[in-house]
Image (tube, rainbow, N blue to C red):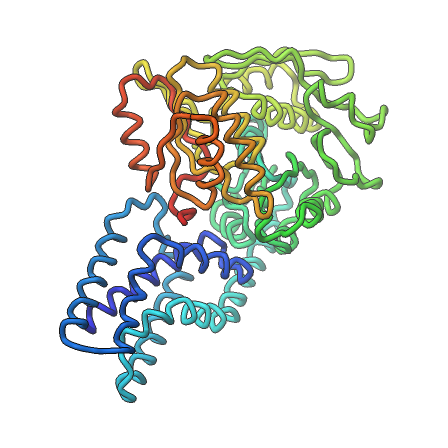
Length: 501
């Protein structure tokens, strides 16, 4: 029995640490994580050992062991797309948790307390371990940060800092593809946008001859960007947009705006989306970008500032063309990328390149060769079927944009999604709006269980819409690809079971 209980504790600890890692180890995310974890389908099975408080017999103990084994089996049989990354930090945390469990287990044994009750201390032990290791992690982070800061200072590249609620990784990749043949260019890899991710990528991947460094600054909590700016201070800043995202941790949109705008305040030159509502700094060189329909509605624009905008957008399922405007110049660009958001991201990237002096003929060639960023409106063609992979993450605008792209393709369209999962107090409203758009654009929805499931189901039911709820992405995906009639599949938003109920 001891071995079985220990195994359950380790399994629980694994999944708790997975969710903690997804929350970037922030304390203010911890209660949200615990709440999500205990709401899992199978967590209620762990209440049954409490029966031993009333009565304990061999039959009850054997039954509890069997139930614990079933619990373990159910968790292990679940398909998890995101796995726990066994980083040095995770290993330290894991080892400390196990040591504390063993220590408490010894105390239980000495005072004849049933070992099974350790099951209910997993979350508390993990929190205690996190607290105990905080000074250690702070010292380790400081080491990497100082090392990266010194390297940046010695190389002294032109730093382009990018942040925003959406599109920052795409802009980073597009800029890199445009600049890398003109300058020795570095960019933070993948979605490394935390202070530690930025520091490590600078320490281990930045060339000592780097001329331009493109750094993505992410923020899921207050203070995230402020920490990252201690490592690298951008000369040029770009805020792609600011929208409702991470409200669970930021609490208000004003807090999101303040955090993102730190990038503008510390830079010399700032590029901003004309749809943005934040107050612009008077002491900066300001350059606007956007779509024509938005540019001339912006009351903040200074007529003396060169503005960059796109219009005459034409796209079909094979690609996009648009006209790019800079003062009195108009140049037509073509790209294989789809969607209005991609046009905006490309426009902002061209604007920065023009500021750096790159000519239009060179940029036209580069834009035509732009490759999509993995899992961001990535078009995958398999025979007569098209899979649109937009699974990295999503906010309301990005979700609706993906559905607009779906409309370019053939009928028999299906969407696989958990809905929007990070809307905070506005979660219900956002998902109801998105669900109406799903009904307009897709013939069927495979809804992956999440905290947003009920909001979408209510709208789907009231509109007699064709949908089914799946317990995992892989279940939904297998059903979709095995359906011969489906011609277009959209995979939208995070589909990992980090968002399971």
